Length: 230
Image (tube, rainbow, N blue to C red; front, side, top):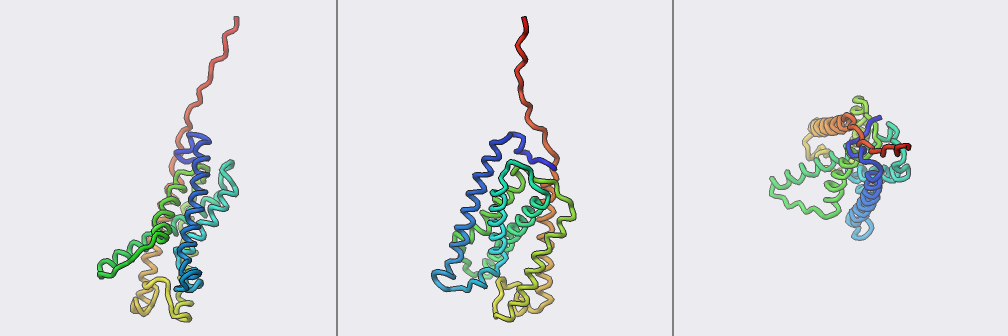
């Protein structure tokens, strides 16, 4: 088991991250509720379609992860599986943000106006940024094995199969690059999927490397010398 750089300052850091996790949980939930406005208020989208976005699923996973972390508290070290779960969820959040940026850039190159509401900015940029900070600096995480990187492909693989099976049935795809008609063929979709898989592996490897950073020495504790005896 390893320790993060901030862990050497002692329990105040645990209190800080406890507060940060509560704030992150509230922020993510509010952003998800705001994003779901199209289902409950305007009726502009279907709940099943909204829940089919990788970003929404990743942020819901992050909410559940934060609830689990808050329930466990910071009084004891994490189990290795929990550190691995934090790395996987963080990787998915980061990839969601990177993909969103790529879509915005492509829209700009095509002179297409891409309006980004506040909830989308929070889910794609703010939440992933905090997830990285939490993973790198929050105390108690384990050193992860390098083979964990391959586990990161499990959920995206299931998601891809689900999307390609559901898409033709409902006539809708959450992302245009997963639509064979837009991409040109299933082979082209496979190319996009391979690129995303490479990004997921790269982000996961970076997080695993961060978990394996060498342990820093704890701050020395000063002790008073015993009083001299007469």
